[in-house]
Amino acid sequence: MVKFFKVAGHMFSIEMDDGSLLWDKMTVNYGPFEVSGKGSDAPTFALVVTNPADWRNGRIGSMEPLYVSRNGEDEPQTDLFADGDGLYVETSPNGRIPKIASLSISPDCRKGDLRIGDARYSKFAIDNAAMLMFAFATVGLDTLEMHSSVTVNDGRAYMFLAKSGTGKSTHSRMWVENIPGSEVLNDDNPIVRVLPDGSVRVYGSPWSGKTPCYRNESAPLGAMVLIRRCPDNKITRLSAFEAYAVVSSSSSGFRGIGRFADGLHETISKIVLEQPCFVLDCRPDAEAAQVCHDAVCK
Figure 1 (cartoon, helix red, strand yellow):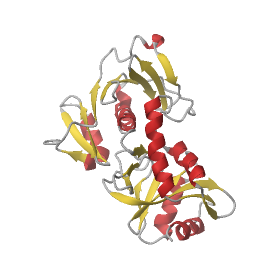
Figure 2: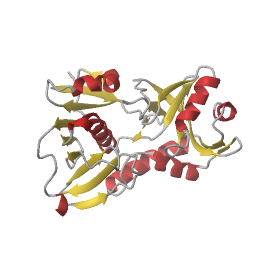
Figure 3: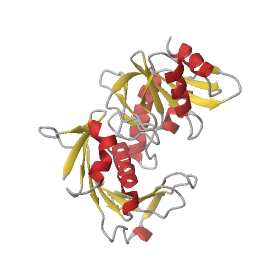
Figure 4: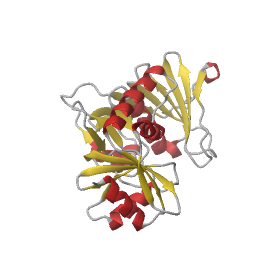
């Protein structure tokens, strides 16, 4: 069975056995983005999911390592290798669990073969593979997959950026609780697109971390805000140069391949030259939300 999904205007497909119980598990987060696929152009990428006994590539020892995960043991682990002209990935939900799935990616990043070795982690494997494929396949299409919590207020999207555990989700919650009309669009992995007219729009996605927020909606970008913990609440607008570093560090992608790096650079540059970016030094409280709101919503 093949199902089609559209996220931020980019359609992709996922294929696996008709009777797989995974289809039901995927309904919550992928359901809002499902489309018929009929009469449409070819998908941006196609992901094929299998569960074979020989899920691991026997040639991994001869492959060139491009990226080896150095996340903490509680964070997902992803190792990336060059496989001829294509790419090969092995993943695990955290550092305490051996790798549980492999993903072979075609040279043009439009075809992914996901082989799941441990069925207990199938949902994680599919989400991780789909996110990687989306980031790689859209890197040259003025599209960024971001690590951010997004709150919409008065028709505009405000993206809160920070390292994991710093308080992105907390700050979004402070807006919802204290700034009337605020609601969360996505709490971990929104998509940002620069449209042909130069405007920037933020989209919900099927991937939202630990918060189940899978809204197939979008809003024009109002501002990006880097969250930093501080005893006082104060906000400062960043220069385009400073903003570039902030947005770059929060965007998903791999810069070790030239065309990926070029695509990320072009999109990030377009965003920071046109859109405001701030740093909010703050406590996790209602006043911080009000200070942020008053500055970015002028």
